Image (cartoon, rainbow, N blue to C red):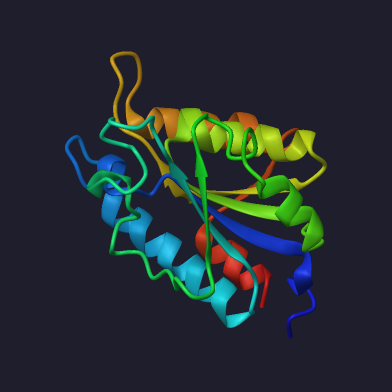
Length: 183
């Protein structure tokens, strides 16, 4: 029943904050993104596995300073403040300058399931950084997003990262496939 998940996996929900997810321009396919992440949160909760909410925290006085309204996780996500862990970062990597790697090591986590914002920045960095730390990343292909840039559409950025990270960096699968494989 829980054999595949055991205490080896943790869910990393990256930068799903009001300032990035609820202020224009909104992330590509925002509602589907929130739905997919909530499915994963529920799955991890049902299997009593850790969920980490990573928040980008700017310097004091900035809009993203800890405690500011836009710094908070979007209320649409089904987090459990009593059980889930919150980690604040000030860089693209959720491991750089935080105790996340030590916590994962203490909990014997061998794989992290990665979702959130933004694809080409903190999500990509989380995949590469976790691999460098010896923790295998699983990128949820329909669980991360971004906005259009002058060079590429958000859909193209997401597709590009799903393709280039799959294999050498991360195992890439969609929400439904992950949940089905981990039952």
